[in-house]
Image (cartoon, rainbow, N blue to C red; front, top):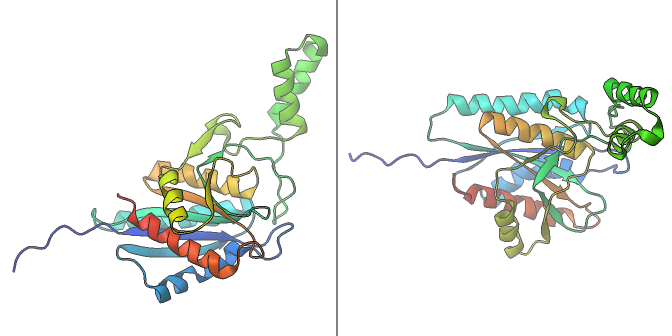
Length: 258
């Protein structure tokens, strides 16, 4: 018998959605993540595409990190145990934007948490002690009128608006992390399939951005990929259309070269 050619790499996609949160009693991403595997199996999975897992995260910052990292690490462990020809791994996170009228492919996350309200586990980022110490020290040692506008602006914003870094060791709140997936090409392919979809460079400063930043950081450290997609409410784009969109997105991701 002749020798077989090399095994074609597969794309394993792990999907997450979120539970309800303040102002959104029914989160469409919970429905999408819960039903996507069955939906794709009925539709017919493309060759070389595997749905590795579908998970629902608490709509929380720190409270979602332990299960998130457990899922991320399990995917890496599975990848390491397989042959070198196997598996491009993509973590695909769905989040809802209740004010959106179309889908948004998120290009990046920002190292900034500025929650407008506590998350679903009651947590809200708090200004770090050193910001308050810096601010008080500046006021004590330099009259307000002599303080540079830059210093005053930085400390007032950090203290009063509680803009704090998600990962302090990464630097300040202006630090960004970008997905290594080709968001422009993905958006173009989905637009050609008839969906209203855009590239976004602002995932907000709430839980979606918080989770995405951690996921992108983990992906970079472990040689995998991460993508976040914001979807509208079902009253704006109905459930069936959103399921079709999610299925099409998986097909596009599977078609991206290794």
